[in-house]
Length: 152
Image (tube, rainbow, N blue to C red; front, side):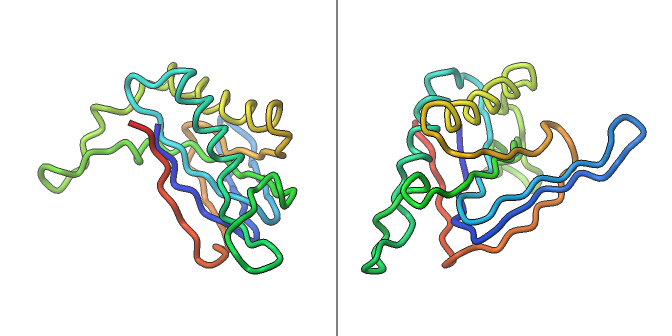
């Protein structure tokens, strides 16, 4: 599991209406915008680890302007966006290979689990995109602060 984590002042996700689905929009104020890619072999173990890491990652400023506070500490929110392309392999050729990306029937429940863990175990408000949809993400990065979170 790999996450690109951005500290944001605000973020939103929009999905345009299609023949199969209505338009969709969610937004957060200050917090984290998390793009999450699920790889082959990922399981509940990785979901629990990454949810805990996201909840406790100290990347918000304290009263002394030091990165010492977590999203929990600032009562921030998380916008969680599934992004399979994060697991793309660009080492050979010019077209990414997605052979290591988890299949949707594995990936979708794990992304949902990360969101539920953030909410239930860490009391963080979570908004999400729509798994597998073409999404438009609008965000104001704060800092900028952007990190890649991954556990081997």
